[in-house]
Length: 176
Image (cartoon, rainbow, N blue to C red):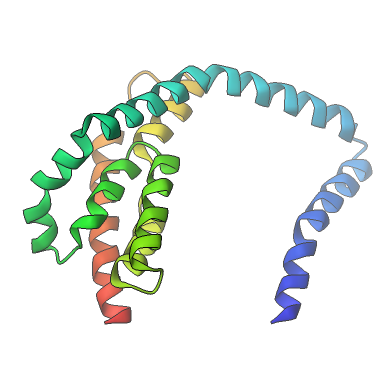
């Protein structure tokens, strides 16, 4: 098991080394290219920052106003029909908007129920099976200036619902 830790510690430096050596062999000005890439990255960050801040404020408003709890209560019958603990509904709803907000809720679940509980295992699978749809769409579509998203939102919501259902099914299948 220790060899896995050693390999993991060396992977990133090895990748950097391979990139630098490859660039040098191809006579690319590696440092200059790196600096150009960093500058472009900063421009993208500045472009998406207003959207990111708006999403963070929206999630905070949903939590503070009680709207998230109201939505969770309204969806409780669906949750019970799926055999999903109702304590996971806020995570499922929040994950659509913001992964960092969902992470706070996930930590609360792990502290309350423990990582080896039904809730802990299910939320772990759920978070890996779903995506932060609104964040991803707004950030990436804004960065490349996509105006017509067509069926992206509906398709992504259906995929998230499938991920949530799969997390419930997989948790019961694997652990119970």
